Length: 417
Ligand code: FES
Ligand SMILES: [Fe+2]
Image (cartoon, rainbow, N blue to C red; front, side, top):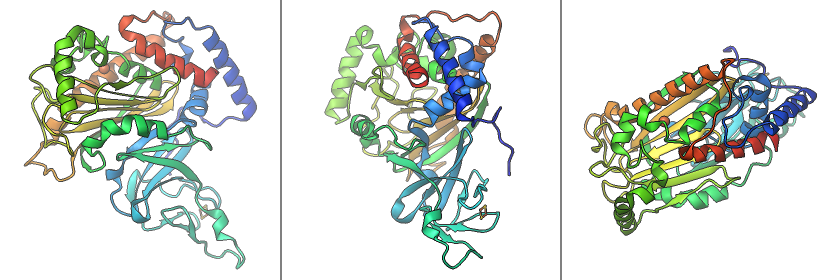
């Protein structure tokens, strides 16, 4: 069994958790609105434990894509805090999520990152489980042993146009609002009918919030993202999603075009208490895809009618970021590992019938976001390194960083509200 990758044990007795929460509440109360958070929010073990309990164990988390598990029995594993999970394809295409913990004496069922199992066999005493979690057999147990009472502990799961979300809470927040609001934007891409072009795993020396904060502003784009600024309208001078006022003509022309094409336009903006956002916004004239030169890199996705569908982006707190061009989309999954560490998994998808080498080159499909994401990882890690200094003090957000303030408001409400 692999060693725990976490900096500390994440589970705390409830008294210790209450003390940690009281500390977080004090820190939150001392925060100056409009300023970045105090140092402990990015490096303190108590804060990290509260983040896991109050954010990651309560909200819908992006786990992966259905094309990772195409056949019954295909599975992948993931660990959130101290909770090892397994996401598996079951009967009739159903997607199940379970705690990867045997109900006999607690062994994990599999330590593999992904694989195929018609049934899960616990490595310790060989209890056998169906993909849907039911206990199939338990050798040498008494005749009257009630198998039905010892299935795998289920985890809530929802699939949104191919994107798999799980929630560790007993009573998750409603999922219907995101399906209602964001679903119509997603439909024409047929995101469930894609295949992986490539994927990349990163281990980051940064608190998960620094990565989220980075993705909520484009103030850093001018200095940090030459590729992004070359292709996306408004990047480098404005927030691209909200650059309408300064680029009225291009916006009006593109939105009219998208409407004629049957594509949803506008944005579902974060409100004070919401956990999801999406928007469609224009490329710079001449660009049609998030590639280094703005030119196409793959066949159009789903029912996208022509090359210029703009950029379509989704963000869901606390761990997901996505951007689509008309011909491919990418997903970023953040996994918190410690007070100052997280993982990022970036994946690129093209339509399922595209042929590698003929229709697309994985290097070209991934080039733009490999560059952009790696630039962000460096910015996030540099941010973390400076915050650890005794000289760090919270600094003021500027007009291009208002979206961060919304995120911080949401976050503080979860951990200290
Ligand atoms: S711990 Fe799994 S069968 Fe015993
Ligand atoms: Fe960035």
